[in-house]
Image 1 (cartoon, one colour):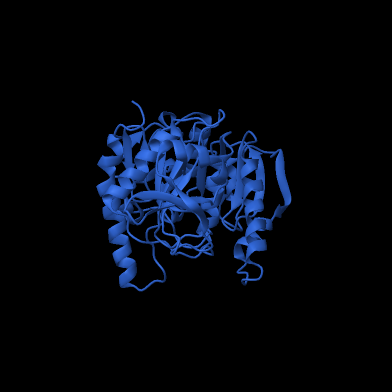
Image 2: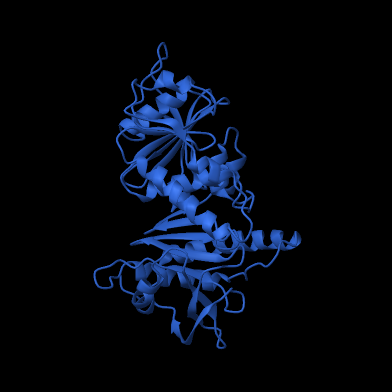
Length: 381
């Protein structure tokens, strides 16, 4: 297929995306919750997805374009960078300008001009809340998102398109029994908008773990308890003494406007530093207060505990069906050991990133009386 031909997945998904944004914008207006984005029409949504898809398959000096497109007018944007001559919304133009918007947090602004044609008018960083955003994550891989508001925090994923495969995030997944707070925050539809919600630190850790691409495991254990040691091979090669508390302290701060930028930079550095430790063979262990206890730890079955034979698996997408499988179905040693750890330490949480981009959150489910594996990679793109 060549540019100019239709991309069926875009046209199939566009009405569902429109319904999502129309519903949430109407609800937000009913609550009078500050400046909101404009609602893109179905045609605009399909056209943006189509142009982005064909651009994702191109190359610019051997680099794959990674771009983010936001449906927003210059009047709605804060500090917009406006082009004197807007660019056409097509794959060739998007590919040429991609290097200028490669850094995270910069979006190409798309709006209808005086002739009601879609055009790229410039770039923008801060977006109004519930702004439609389409990100090119990889060749043929598009992610529909919306902004929580401002420039801080993780966007809320709405849908993922990979080639002809469409995954629409199930907003109701957060209301299921035993849903971990991390999953609720990743879904984000009803989560607090403030960055200071401490669960968002775990979200950022998950994003950073997946981002380094080497795979890894992170265990979140209760603060003030040593029971987790019963499931770890002793001695631990890389145990911290005393616990490293930088991220824990930063996560509890509530800086005023004069310190917010410096605080955010320090928080990002601390998150990335701890997430990078998961690249070391073994598991990184944090308390629920985000204090680092150890990394490179080897998980062992707790004495007297049976080996885990089954886990429940779900993915928070519409039409997804739960399944009960052997842990080996999910992956290799990391997944097996993480499921065993959560089975033996039922107040703990285990995060596992695979080298291929899959990401699983393991938590004990009292309702199911077994370990529940939440596949959440669609929420982290």
